[in-house]
Image (cartoon, rainbow, N blue to C red; front, side, top):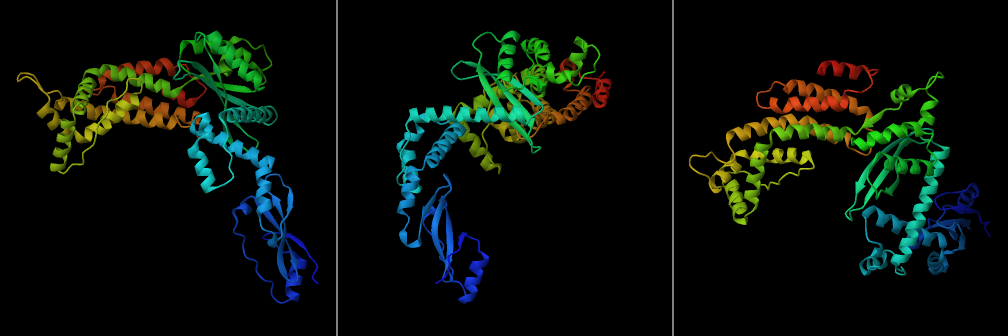
Amino acid sequence: MGTGTGTRTGSTSPMGMAAASASGSRARRRAPTSKVWLEFEEVTEIHGGREVRVSAICLHCKGTSFAKSSFGTRHLRRHLDLCPPKKEKDAHELCRLIARLDLPLCFGESDAFQGYITNAHNPKFVKSSRQTTARDLIGLYNNRVEQLVDVLKNSVSSVALTSDIWSGKAKEDYISMVALFVNSDWCLEKRLLGLKSIEVAHTGVNIVERVEMVASDYGITDKIFAIVLGNASSNKTAMDVLKHVFSGYIGSLMPKRARNEDDLAVVFLHQHCACHIINLIIKSCLKRLLPYLEDFRTAITFLNSSNQRIASYKQYCLSVGVCPRKFGVDMDVRWNSTYLMLKHLVPCQSTFSVCIETNHPHKEDVSFLVTPNHWAIAEKLLSFLQLFYDSTIALSVVYYPTLPLMLHHILKIARHLNAYENHERLRIAVVPMKTKFLKYWWEIPYSIHLLSFLILELR
């Protein structure tokens, strides 16, 4: 009679190897096929040179259940139906799914979701009501907040804060605050600290009150070393107050001599949003070229306003061997859409011009809606805006820090503006752009040699 030796699946003990050697070769046990073993870990023993399953460990509650191969798995399924950690994990994952995809709270009790889970995963699935889901979401949120507070208090020494005001579809305004920090594993983390309702005027005093409240709740008032705010005048007013509120971290880095207002202003720098500044610079350019852009918008709207014109344009493109495409009008609030409008339009200027000249009404003594001069301006403008578009894309990502890249792109933009300052067609737009550039990026600390060179080059 063999002596049993307990082992986990996938491992072989020395005694098990000896038993296998004594009886020749150990019989290889067939792998389990039931889906229940995805949530249990098998424990086996060697009996008479054979590997036999004797028990199972739940991966959720770590409890051990008797599970001989001849006993089946029905009792293990019953355990999963009653296992509190398993049920808690299911509710946790449902809340994460709803939050990540912005689904309604009633999603967990919908027939479609219940049918999917019942047929594909768990026949005994019990749907969750919206009230239960709401309660679970609140519990999950509070648990995550506690974990984040613990990390920020005990494992993080310095935090960079980003804040902006966000308007929802229900006409309710919120001020968002995001923390960026390096964790104990030297990995950059980005965490949303909260969305605070701001039902009052967006003044500097009200912004300070909510930013200070969030920082105090997470215990990072003395750990903030940098703040990124927008370019509104209220943010500048808020920064004048916040640099004193958050002076605890900066104060430890300053000399022991008297710390006056100028010292604090130099160390605690209010950095404006680079993408917003680029947007303002481009807006000053597009304003000077508005007549040309309006003609393109009118032409695209004219083409898209009739199904017959769209079909006629498609047939003409196919007849000349050109792949047809649709064109969209840009949006006033996003200059990138103007760049993309021109990017899609310029390569199709030959077919687009024929379509407009053929269908758009015009008088004999008046030029066509879109002339060769329009296309020449569009080509130069498209080439000119390429750099700004690339910089906006590079500085608006969320998966890596962009502050180290900002100086590089500022320098490229400065040289780009100088190169086009005397351009025959774009000079009228580039000069105001340089003025706007210097308005926001003139007062950058001179200790940065790269920026010192930049300022001298622009002046």
